Length: 249
Ligand SMILES: C[S@@+](CC[C@H](N)C(=O)[O-])C[C@H]1O[C@@H](n2cnc3c(N)ncnc32)[C@H](O)[C@@H]1O
Image 1: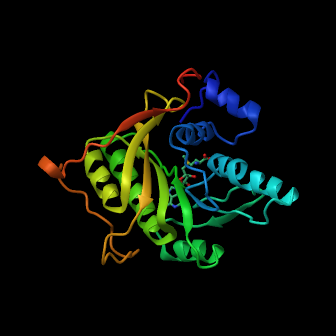
Image 2: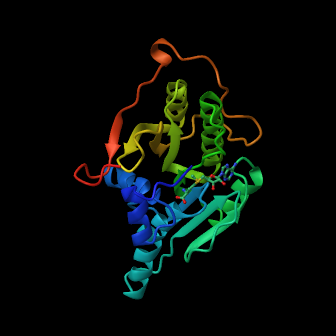
């Protein structure tokens, strides 16, 4: 995508030292949904170049360092970032260069948590765009399913999952599938997200695995199918994120 240098969030990101303007999307999601409180283990899926990892660093790692310095606590948060591409290092962030669809990656993440699981998983994944709308939407949906799949391995009960989605024709199927795993599912469009883009974000709270469900990385979680009808069609609350008096992209 061509970067619009007149874009307010692009300029703000440069000034404030964020690696990408996307940082504001996660910050605004947090303003609306309070996703960081109590989080000590977080995973950033599809993290490069790293602005969401920077948000995790500033919200979790630096405050913890401050508490440690003041003798108030000795708990270090663990932040793991995964991407196919290499990412420049960030203090307090463990980086894995890997594919979120592979079992090896989920095992590696859990190893870094010393056998425990994450309280928060975020995913801003985007495949290479072809420009063909339906294909892009389909591939994006497959990527979010991969993110949800790996999340069923690495997220602890009660945890939160935030992910980018494209609000296209099949989105209600995705909402229904997410609601199998999370008690609360919301869809939000941060004000920094370009209004011309069909991108939105799901915020899913209170993770719980269905009884007898065995997470597996081998089978796809769900298959693309026809539109859901009747009571299977789930409409989730849709909200704007971010201070509405702030800059509108
Ligand atoms: C929009 S960028 C993420 C931006 C990032 N959140 C930030 O704020 O800097 C999307 C990323 O998804 C990654 N990606 C796409 N498919 C992936 C996969 N299967 N496994 C891991 N990363 C993937 C790409 O390499 C790309 O870096």
